[in-house]
Image (cartoon, rainbow over all chains, first blue to last red; front, side, top):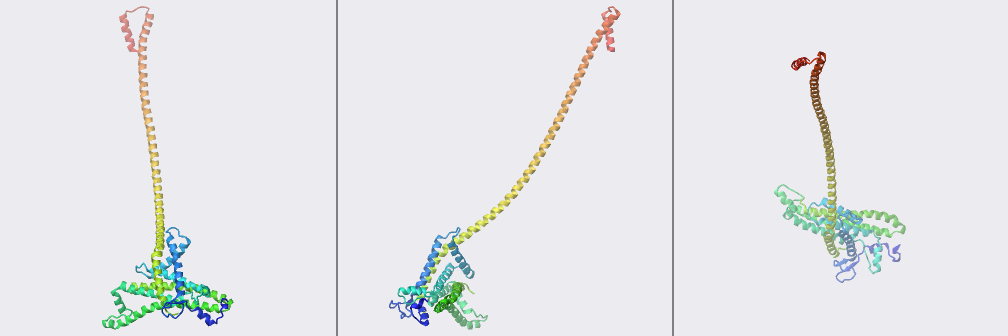
Length: 272
Length: 156
């Protein structure tokens, strides 16, 4: 086993893998005393790096894109584009040139970050360990900061579009949905209830969106860590089925996150 | 696992990524895709059009063949009629010419016969006179002679 040279108990091993590489922004040192004012360097590094790779690759394809017979790489990219475009245009009926690219970015970025889950759990921490990094958590989507960063961006956008598209209608919608009444008195009584419901609905969306992704990936990562604790011959018996299963999960989670984001943005554009 | 400033850092990263995708990636590829879609649609439309034109050409060609056939038949008919007319004309002409020839031949025959008759008449007179002279052995006067001869001739 690879962790043999570092004698640790199982608990220590698991906890070691659950710690981030943290930069304290107050003192600019690598400690966890910064509280809110600190950066999870591993999350940022992996997320930015994977994003750059993806965008660089797509940019290269986009520059060389031909409307004639596409090459293999362009074909692959076009399949993804077609898939994202179809999925988002089925749900989103408004005219907003940002939605489809946003969905594509979300889908590919989340997929790439989830994919880090399939990299052997000890590989990146060991590599970074050579450079003196104490902790390294490679799966950025198993970090609440990453998932909330995306879901809160969607939240902000959906609030912005709610105000921009609906204008005064928004007030009517907030006051009269989901509980409707025909009489004037009923309307007045139900308005505060509707208001509270609407606020709850809007606030719960980003929380559920990010926690779903985080939960799936964190659990998956944890199980990989637990499998790594087992004797070497169990690595294949348990590791391979879980890896195969996880390939499905990372794809589905990326797709769900993308679709729900599009749905939320679509709800912000349409009066229901 | 705590929420910290990474949240805002990643929100900015996300915004930049979305902006980049929207600006520099999405339009290029979707444009290429829609252009290809248009090309393919145009190609299919052109193929349909060509198919229709081919069918049209087929019917046109059939029409042409039918028309040519009827024209050919007409020409043959006309030629036949003309030949018949020419044959008829030739026959008629031949008949007329024959008639003329026959008529002139008859005329000639009549003429010859008349000539012969006349000649015969004159010869007969001489012959008669000669015979009479021989028979009578004497010369009768010319006046009597001549009237006698004439009388005989008119009786011939």
